[in-house]
Length: 129
Image (cartoon, rainbow, N blue to C red; front, side, top):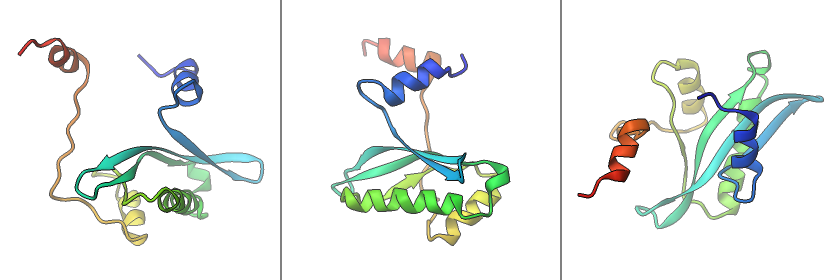
């Protein structure tokens, strides 16, 4: 089912927010956001930040909005003594990949992302094994 405004309100602004959101404006117009949450690295023994979404409206791209949002996420990470900020990007999104490498981010070629959803998630949860 599609995400509703109610879903977002409950999960982001309810009693136990699941994530934090930074909003970017050009003048009075909202033009982008960074949505992130805390994770943990057993490799580092430190907290981290996972950037779930970084979005800038096409009309606002190439104006430093994405950079400003990522810079603020990086500042928050350091303020909270996090060891890293990480995120995923679709392989075909060459513009984003170029942007991320320009700011110093490095791809994790030796890792594969897995996702468990829907029926597979329910089957595993219901398993008695």
